[in-house]
Length: 182
Image (cartoon, rainbow, N blue to C red; front, side, top):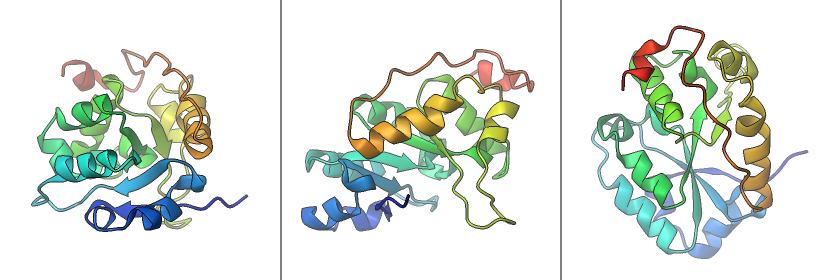
């Protein structure tokens, strides 16, 4: 089943009319998937997201762990989540496919309960395949996999109440002790 929706660059989203944004929301529901900027010079991310929220949008941030702004300001995502923003990380980020900084950032977000969805961010079968469960299992998140890849995405698409977050493990079998030291 194909469901409508789009991942919209944050810089573009703030310039769209409300009726245009409504057509781009995930599954026709209340959530807009907003792409975080990859530029290290991006400024005003928090203000732009606040603007979208103030216009009545619910926001899911796509791969904030890969955004230099979120890597440099370790409290930014927590501030946004406290306003109701949800975070979707890329499964490959959990296992280091985008480098150590992204992996460490992803683990810190997960450890602090700031990850709500894990997605494949698949681009092709070879370069970035549609895989999530293997990455979650490798990081000791098997018990949370259903919530991260099925329950939360379903609630987001349906616009229904979000299911309670399961307890995230404090110790990963893969030796991610550096996460616990943050």
